[in-house]
Length: 372
Image (cartoon, rainbow, N blue to C red; front, side):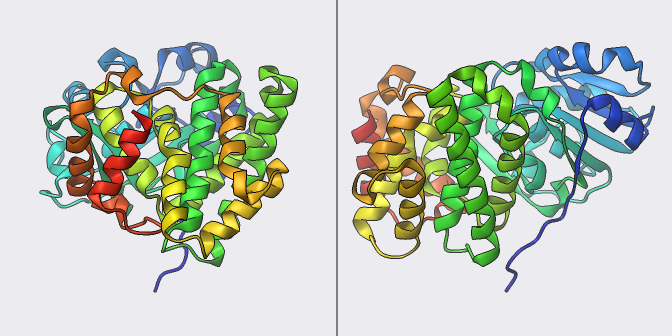
């Protein structure tokens, strides 16, 4: 039984310029990024790479239409490496571009209708402190025609190199920093209670949890600007949380959030945040013994509260970063609740198998209704 795997080499640089020099970026490199990152960090370097600006193809979460449009525009372009510089959208898109035989449609890859063969090198530089996607073999995209998100998980889309450059976080608005950082915390906590967790993955989960909660407490005490003192710490913690969930997986928090993101375009981190503590309360009610006790004790110690009110204290801390909203404020309708629960049971088994305990469709519906 495999316990732990890290397939990417992890690097750290003070600046993108240092990275570009060390990695010898050239004309055989396809760089997928955003214009707001290109202009301050890359344009002045006059690199001979082929640059793709993701926002030209649509805003928000990654989707199959975006990916297919970029595929069409890069058809015939010769390149050996894909360099992803951006947040979750850029990273999830870029992972598909290392695959052989995509043609002009990514859907057969998500449906596993074509062999997943890697033919390009992949280098990922995250510019948010949240996804951990630079060290996972997962790409998530909204499939427009199906009104849901799908995940593709395969080592063929794992980065060869993951690169940490804290300077990219300086221009990130606070709300995006907060949402992505909460997502990283959820990665650490969900992977801790996963049935696939072990001593190796929990070591990563605990390190990430401790760091992220410490940064959050600092922001709550000293204000939003405090995050600038801890950019490197948060980026590293998100990376370590990504290593944890890349090996142990995440569960119902992510599974329940996908219909919200797919139907109402709620950003991934914010969508996960809506379900975080409510899912864990449901877990605790069904099985109060075991790893959930351990993680609750760790969080309670960090927040200096009792285990009995750990979720209330956690919600209070996270609420100082982003206010939680009822699901109806995102556009969700009461008559959709049952359908969402049924859809999750059908389409998100990849995630639900990582639940701390099994949840029935009625229990999932109850979680949606309690948050509605």
